[in-house]
Amino acid sequence: MSCVLGVAVSLHLSDDDLWLAIVQNTNAVSALIERQADLEAGNGAIKDPDNPAHRMLVQDNRLKLDRFAREYADYTAELRRRYP
Image (cartoon, rainbow, N blue to C red; front, top):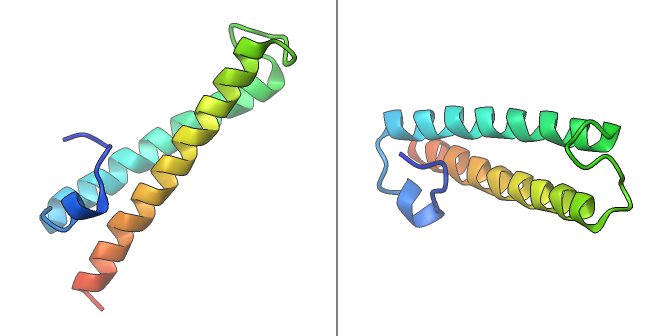
């Protein structure tokens, strides 16, 4: 199962699949937060924060974090809808 699921897809997932998606999403977010901290500390492959490639990595990481946050909200909203 992919972590990239949309709202429409989450409606068709079983409860177990929703919980699995939440776990996978949480693991991915944890890894991205760690990566973001490394990038901000200059521990990445590109250490110069003024380097356009470094800025692109930081921006890409933020976009992924935003996407995972939306997905997490979708999954948990679906569980709340099922179990008010």
